[in-house]
Amino acid sequence: MGSVVFDCDSTLSAIEGIEYISADHVAAVEALTREAMEGLTPLESVYGRRLDLVRPDRATVDRLTSAYIDTLTEDAREVVAALIAEGVRVRVLSGGLLPAVRGLAQELGLGPGDVAAVEVMFEADGSWRGYDAASPLARAGGKAEILGGWRATMPAPVMLVGDGATDAEAKDAVDVFVAYCGLVERPVVVAAADAVVRSLSLAPVLALALGAPPTDPGRLKLYEKGRSLLLTDAAYEDQPEPRKQRA
Image (cartoon, rainbow, N blue to C red):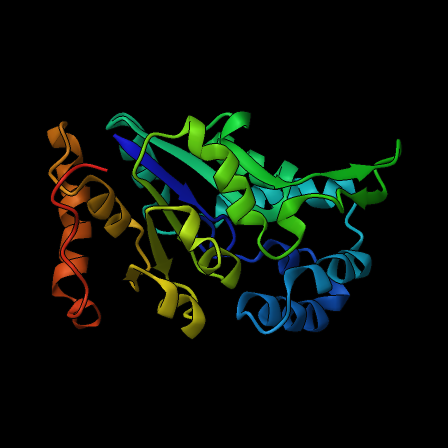
């Protein structure tokens, strides 16, 4: 038993949601996102600025939901399913827009209570009205705050998997922080990590979380794939082996 908490953008999904919906403002939004995810600028200094540029309507957020699902990271669906089947609690923690992140989580078999992201509001005609500026996930330190509240309802140990500075700064709120670098590698995130996954596949997360072969032989191939990626890639030569006991 145990828990695994995934980031959404550039972790469970291969896209950065705010960049996907940024249209004519893509260059500016990409620059702001990069500053925040590399830890160069506090998230709260860029979060509202990005949304003020984009002002997505309901239809745009719906398209983002579909895009998240269409761009699931390699083995993301299978890893989440295997973790759940093995008794591991799985949740998604994201600074993304709640309707889209929740839609992705639902596709992966998770319920509304397994998701935390930033709520957005629309006018009656579906146009943009605003976002929950008071959400902890719209500022630095917010993920650690949410994780602190979740600890009472999640079996330990708790593993956090993410790619950005907002994930790295939450490492003290969990037992294990895994930097997922299969899509983008940020030095500040790698430096904070207990383990680093550089493969496109999320299968190593299954191996790290379980630490022993799964109870169902049907999931053994995925587990062994993850273990192989951890143990044979030269990038992992200085990392500890997967856990010896189940998370």
